[in-house]
Amino acid sequence: MIYFDNSATTKPLAEVAELVSNDLQSDDLWGNPGSLHELGTSAYKAYINAKEDIASCLFVREQELVFTSCATESANTAIVGFLRRNKRNGRTIISTKTEHRATLSVLERLSNEGYTVKYINVDRNGKPDLNELSNAIDGDTSLMCFTHVNNETGAILPLNEICEIRNQKNRNTALYVDFVQSAGKLKLNLKELNVDLASFSAHKFHGLKGCGFLYVKNGVKIDPYILGGGQQNGFRSGTEAVYLYRSTALALKRSQEDIDEHYDQVSKINDYLRNELSKRKATILSPEDALPYVLNVSFDGFESETMLHCLERYNIYVSTISACSSKTKKISYVLEAMGVDRKLATNAVRLSFSRFNTMEEAKIFIEKIDEIYELFALR
Ligand code: PLP
Image 1: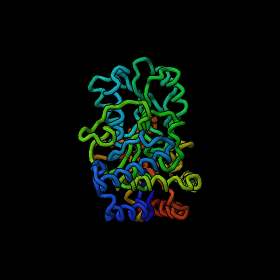
Image 2 (image 1 turned 180 degrees about the horizontal axis):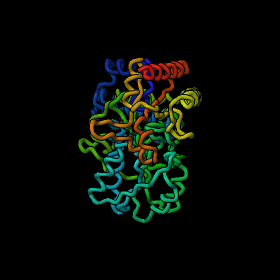
Image 3 (image 1 turned 30 degrees about the horizontal axis):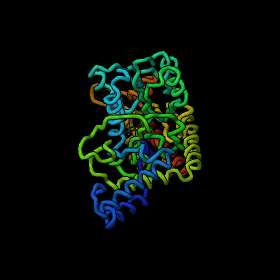
Image 4 (image 1 turned 120 degrees about the vertical axis):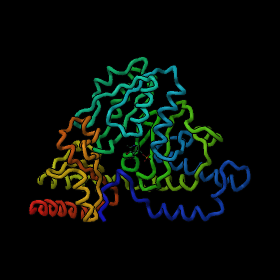
C-alpha cells in the first residue's frame, strides 16, 4: 500500500498502540483524575505529565494547554469562547475563505448572530492580501482566525507579518491559528510565534483520533464551551481521558525527533513528484513555497474522483477535494478562493505525505500514473 493521504489522517505509531494497550491494563492509570484517593492521584499525575510533555514540545507552559476531543472542538472553543468572554473587545472577526470548515462553520454561525466577519482575499499562492488585512483591522476587530498550513494546498501563512500588522493596528485583536497541518512537521515555538489561541489534532501526527488540544496563551481569557464538572481548570469539563493524552504526548514527542531530516526527506519526494508530474499531463496547484508535506496536482483528462479510484486499484491512496454530484460539479472552495481555473480545480487531487513515505513509493506512483494514462489512451 502507498498511503499519500496523510493530511486526512495518519497511521498511529506502533509505539502509540503499545502504550495505549499497556495503559489500559495498568492499575495506576484507569482512575478518575478528580478522585481524591491514590488511584485518582496517580491518574492526575499522568494527565499533568502528558500536558508537560506536549508543552515542552511547543515551548509553552502546561497551564496553557487544554485537551479536547479533536481540532474541530478546539476551534469552536477558541473562537466562541474568546468572543463570549471578551464582548467589549469588539464585534468584528477577520479571516479568509480558505480556512478549514472547523473555522468557517463557526464564523458563519457568528455572522448569523450579528458579528461582522471580514474575509481577506488570498492570492494564487493562497496567501492573504496583507494590505487588505491592514486596512481591515480597526478598533472593533476582536479576533483574527487563520490556518498555519492549508490542508488542501500546503500554503504557509505569513504569520510573522500578520502579527506585526496586528501589533501596529490593534494590539487588542486576538489571533487564533489552526496548527493542525504543521504540528509534527515544522518546529513550532508558540511563544515566539506570538499567537493567542491555537488548535491541534493528534491523529494528524500519528496519534489517535479522539484527542486534540487547544493552546490558550497565559493571560488570554476564554469562556469554556463545554460545561460540567469543571475539569481542566474549568476550561473543558468531562473526565480526563488520561490514556488518550499520554498517547498524544508520545506521538508529538516522536514527531519532534529528527524533524529536520524528515522535512528534507519529504522535500525530496515532493521535488521529485513536482518535476516528474510537470513533464506529464499534470499541473501543480500547490504554491512553490508550500509545505512539502502537501502536493495538490491537477491531472489532465481525469476528474479528481476518477483518478482517485484509478490509483486505488493499485493500492495507492490519495484524496479528492472537489465533490462531484450528478447535477453540479462542485470544486474545492480553497482552490476557488485562490482563483484556480475551474477546469484545473475539477481535476485536482491532493497527495499528502508523512515521514514514513519513501522515494521508492514516489517512483512507483509515477509508474502507475504512466500506466493509467496508457490504459486510457488505448480506450
Ligand atoms: N483544521 C485543519 C487544517 C484540518 O486539516 C483538519 C482536519 O482535516 C481540522 C482542522 C479538523 O481536525 P479534527 O479532525 O481533529 O477535528
